[in-house]
Image 1: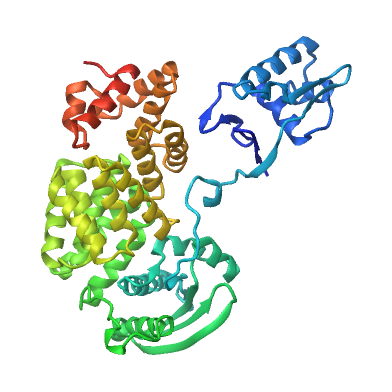
Image 2: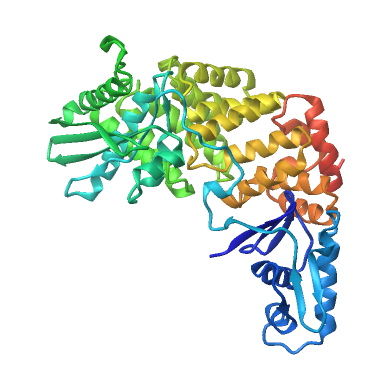
Length: 519
């Protein structure tokens, strides 16, 4: 497995073959990278010329002076730090050895812990993650129902401001995996884990659940709830009530909130759960299918606020992801978002979705930002409410506040399916704060997670200009301009920019002009 080596302010990523100085990649050829990698694998030990030549020129017969040239290039690159050019020591008639401080910085196979981010310390207040319930039915197609029940329980628990509740999609990264409870608790930064199962046989339904203290793996509570499909909401509420009672025994029973009634139409609810399943798949085709399913739910229950909100959000995601979105779809998205708020003015999920859609698609910035702020106040455990509020603050010029909101979103949902959005948002806030070295690391993380996302490419170009790598910035700008209609000219860019402060737009234009944005 490939490794990352850290020495001084340098990091060598073996898997990608890139040497970073801080957050900025160096312009170092692959032969020099191969030589450096071999030297770092044997720190303090002589490495023969023969071994080095084989690493950089496998199977080729070359003169020793080629090796000398590459070693000299390495030393020039390392000389960015005082004294570091001497880290590669010549061993007369033997070869070379690396004598600088070096440590393996971890594997490069993707994991959240290897990315720039936040330490997920266990919260002082009650904190919980609801693991995906297991489908115990004979029919594997009931998986969507089981996932939906799990999500309903997460939603009900998250209504408690005194709890820290990890979002659905971070919990669902453990679906189908056998992972130690203590490890999950450490990875998500929670004290408690709720796991369970659902069995459906005809119209009969059985839900079991057990609450576990993650650090000790001790079982605190377990119970079983049975009924018919007509009782599904009541059964979910009973599970939630029991868990809340165990986590906060001093709370009055009268204070235990019931799950919000989304709809009394079970067929509409079924379509809604199927739509959530498709939405979370995160692909163009699945997103289109989700829209159809949410629209079917709306047709069966015209007062189903959540179905309106999610259908609107599907259209918003299409625009953000660069998928096809007709003008009539934009009009429909605004209708859906507006109606969802009319139907439910006191739900964080509904307000957050509607706020983002109105800002992103309809340029109703003040109205959308207000809705995202309300969403955070209503439910501070809703990770996406923090995410949409973060974008509102970013575009409004409140960059420090935006960064804090993005970080809060990651804390609540470190495994968000659209997990490039918060890192990208942090990258943009750092660009606006002119902290380009830090921004580069976050932007590259977003680029790896969403290679086709236009805003990530634009952020990368901005950093490259600031680093003085104008040839690369212009090359990337020329490619991006073919896909991004905002990059036609400076007047068009001003019109289409979501940034509200003229100073922010001027800042971006100053950099983009150097990359090729025309007057």
